[in-house]
Image (cartoon, rainbow, N blue to C red; front, side, top):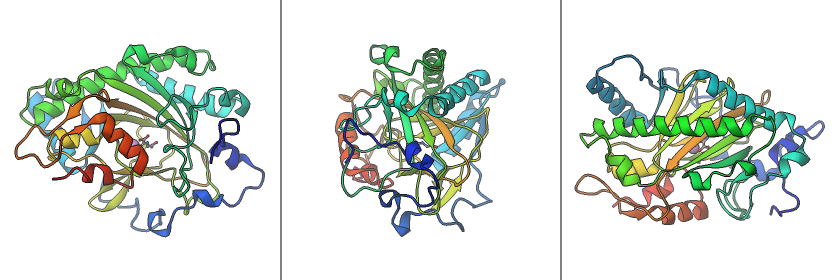
Length: 344
Ligand code: OGA
Ligand code: NI
């Protein structure tokens, strides 16, 4: 078990001299390993790219979004209104934190290993338990909305513009998330503010994930198969592929597109749409040659909010978001087991 004064970061393991095997706690059982064939190589499957720019008819746009939500639960958006330079800046700031700061310096920002989703530098998604296989990933989690949760002093002080970049990125992602939730609501014939109102006060967290290169990528996962808990996740990645989404029972690799933002529907969107739109099951694989970086921005309701289907008859039980999150972190994601448990 990880103890507060001796946290283990995957990056330290990966950098050990002549490391050729991964420690046993990172080895996935055979059924979860990323095998080479029929796994991420489905060439006839490509995640949809939706252009939000120009003066596209909103009905056509909603149709396109509706189709992507029904068929994939995830899609790229281009011309999203967020400056491309800002996407590059946050990737650069994140890479600089993970790759340029000495480990001792990074560990000063360690998150609380005993409290799930606590802010800071960490490696374990779940609170330490003896049986779970560990992800080949380090991360930095930032609490960004509501503004009362935003404490820039807890974020890295290096590079010098790090905190400013995160704050600006957070603001821009919130605008885009609200626009997308409006389009998603409209695409179902609901008022454009429907999901936003159901969400109440918006909680946003930004997680920068760093996946060190791995000596045995065929045995490990960067991030285990899961769906995101909240309403909508906006994700960008660097040039190194590794994110896979599940489509009709196959793993499809999401090709990195540097100017695009990946929209991932979360479990609360599945509940509120009564399963018309499904949350996307996804995972990250590792590779032997290059480290990989991603930035995921999560948009969730307050823990006290109750979420229920907008359509009848309901196919999911109503849930208090805080209870959902606790159960998720206790049981672990195991694909979509937590949302499936709410099916009526
Ligand atoms: C996540 C996630 C994927 C990635 O943080 O929830 O799915 O590519 N990340 O890092
Ligand atoms: Ni995710």
